[in-house]
Amino acid sequence: MMRMLFMSPPNLGAVFGMVPLAQAAVAAGHDVLFGTCSTAVPLVAQAGLNVVDVAPNDDFAALLPRERHAFASNRPDAVSEKSGAPHFFEAFADLMLMGSRELVARWRPDLVVHTSQAVVARHLGVPTLFHGIGFLHHPDMVSPWLRAKSARRRGICDFAVNVSPPSMSAVEPFGRPMRYIPYSGGGVLPDWLFQRLRRPRIAVTLGTVAPRFTGTHPLQWILGSAGQVDAEFVFALGGADPAGLGPLPANVRAVAWLPLNALVRTCTAVVHHGGAGSIMASLDAGLPQLVLPQGADQFDNTDVLIRRGVGVTSSLDRPAAEVLRRLLDDEGLAASARQVQAEMETMPTPAETVPKIAQDVRSAGMSKV
Image (cartoon, rainbow, N blue to C red):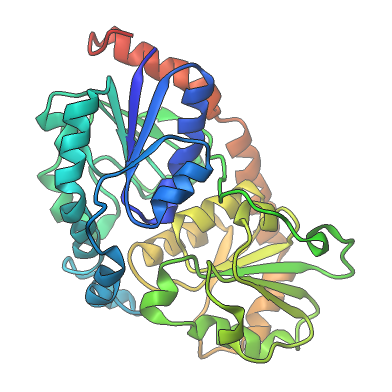
């Protein structure tokens, strides 16, 4: 048995991306603990995992508006700046540093599984496993505009798991391949979600972070043309109040929260902001994607989707109805999306990967497992 400590900043794309491996480790009999902070703490607990708040006295809600500039705007040239999104995520890491160090020192795990927080574990001599959460996420490079930051972090990961479908990987191969299992939290699903559809359904989401920095302009762009498209739209607002959208066309439904993995399984296509969680859930469902990137690594993610032929993008100056109809009608997009879905289904599951991780650690002589 291993003592496995999962560490993540409080952004849900990272937290939710790690939950399936943590749950698989619990089911395999390992002792699992999750370290995170802020609003992610109760969400991890709801996943049936033991969790510690490593920064209980810090105000992460106040950090968001203070770091608004770091997320950048919906301009690719703003995102490419080295001082943009990396600074935003470094601010989270700084607030978590002391509590993370104390947790590792006190609990003494055999392995720390992380998305970006290996430094504390390595400082204390604990083996680390890097958990990729998308096809641009790499132990040495989160995306092209992080290369300078990443150079000084090389060599700090002992092991890694890579959830990128091979045909979509935008970085050098690394780690053990592992199938991405979408997790969006549990919830009581509405009856209408499973009613027989008379026309295609399109899921629309901007995640939970982007709207706080860049607003809801993409949603308004879609709302202005939704009535001209023969489809049903479901806006999943990541916890925001649907009343903020104002009056809705007859073919649009808005909900504050709905697990994305449940929603996309009932859809024909997805519109989203380019976050890793939204992309991977859509790929797992085999759906074509319209991506409206807002900041961080979302422009890079969009480029990869377009190159693979599973997604399109658009400026908000174009008529939305035209773009949405292409999303529904382009058989090339749909076929490519199904190809990637089939590719993902052949990858080892988290349940199959956990014993391989334990063997890796044991073979390296790094643990008593």
